[in-house]
Length: 98
Image (cartoon, rainbow, N blue to C red; front, side, top):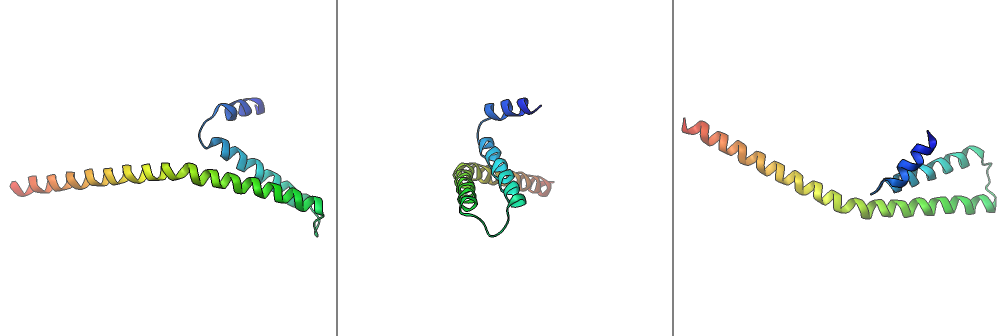
């Protein structure tokens, strides 16, 4: 089962790779939080900083990758609303003619 998930993730495209990386970072941070004793040692601080830097990098990729998609979605939404408005106007005109 685990091997099929790995193959599936490797063959996926788009932002799915970043989603997998976020899951991995989250798992690492959760494991780290469960095992760590405060105050942190220098090694633990460095490890945590690396994970946080990776997470920040992934978030930046999300931001850059989702921006164009968000614009496309807004454009499609506007088109749908314009078509709906035009359809309602046509229906009201047809009703008024009767």
